[in-house]
Length: 142
Image (cartoon, rainbow, N blue to C red; front, side, top):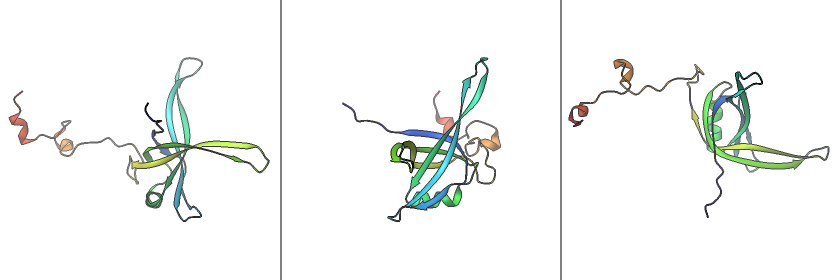
């Protein structure tokens, strides 16, 4: 029987500037909020955007590096896992929460523009083609 799988992939925008903290052990932890838009139909049958909000944590050296480059509004891709935790609040009630623990974070826009940019292969922008041409293309027999 296969093992369990706990994996999540998100692409969205930061809802606030990330906060860098340190555990008592000294391990850096970066906490950030990410909004991921989805679409759903309303009661009238019209498609509307539905934002989903996630709390994300990054640990270790990656947390320190990301804290220097991430700001509110940046578009990022996250590959990680879900982490459930529970605690007792000051009023005695039991609380629980699910966070995303990021194992890798990718920048999906430039820091200055904070907008979605299309990927253009090298050489394609000048020629207007989808893919750059190569001299080896003449050797292809079909």
